[in-house]
Length: 224
Image (cartoon, rainbow, N blue to C red):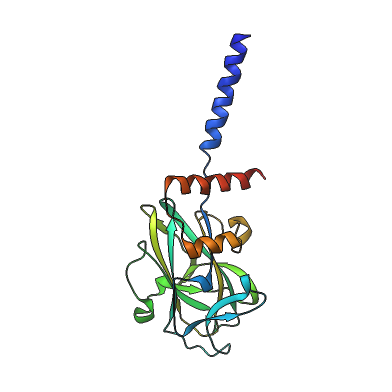
């Protein structure tokens, strides 16, 4: 009987260590209009179909082209080092209103692609006249490829979404360590909740406690 008890405890211990060791994805949902800085001609506008009724864009009619100035900047505290991907909740009306410039420091260099026109930072937004999710990519001359960012440590990062063409609309950003997902459902993308908006406005320091909370939330979703 004593041997049976020890064996049972041993199996339980292995199971618990297995659960703790599971790799949980980091998931952060951000409202575009709650960016830390928004510079003209990027502005906040309203749409009842957008998350919380607001979005950002360089105002203009579809097919006008334009852009080249203005941006939204987000300060994002990531809870752990690693590889990250970004998804945007967007509307892109046509081929002349379907792109942004994107840099995310410190993984990216301190460069202004609006001045350099470096295609490494050009995001070709998937077309559609209704809100939809699109993974942020490199729009290179040789084709379009999903982007990944590698951060060597946890802490403060700076994401800048720069205007490239008028009328391209951005509603929300989803940050994830799931870099293998190529479609939105695989990445578990979601719009920001009231709690997400509160964290975005008030801030959430990166700490061991915060990291455990993030991990536990992901573990709960895995078993729901």
